[in-house]
Image (cartoon, rainbow, N blue to C red):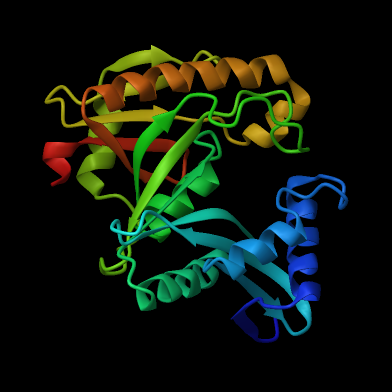
Length: 259
């Protein structure tokens, strides 16, 4: 990495490069990217922003956001991808743009089975998983999600909050390790544990669901539905997703305890 520069994209060639980058990440033909160049251009023209990160001339990350309802003071991030280690500066540039334009909240969705993305969103950025949506997109045909059901976790990021301290409190991790198991995962190991005081639920995800979809799609779908069962019940009971451990365990915290 020479020097990372992040800027908003305004030209046709820049939108085309971002669309190609997204195609490569989501393993689609470049003729059918997740967002077409003309769509990116229209979103930017309508008041949204396409942020792109460059290592010299090489595109290494991008993120796209639009504004929500006029009175909500919030933005919605449609898509983000970056080379390893570059996601935070790109999201921070997007955050700064949103704040300068009057937003205070940013929302987006991600696949809750992808643990590294959960850790990025909940731990590195300090956002919170506030809603679980079953099969959000319906069937998807890209090279990453094909064959799975498209459940998504909605993330809410308070743009005015201080930067988080990385990692979970030690007592919460200790509580997880001793809490009773409530659900068993498809691999036969514990899937979910619940704090006897009903403050926390912990739920595990597979090590690499993207690789698992390729190797064993049926098993990946079993994981999807097992995690869905835990999350939908927990969210109905007033929990939100507040952290993700390095070994693949979500911490779900009861709202009253998180307040």
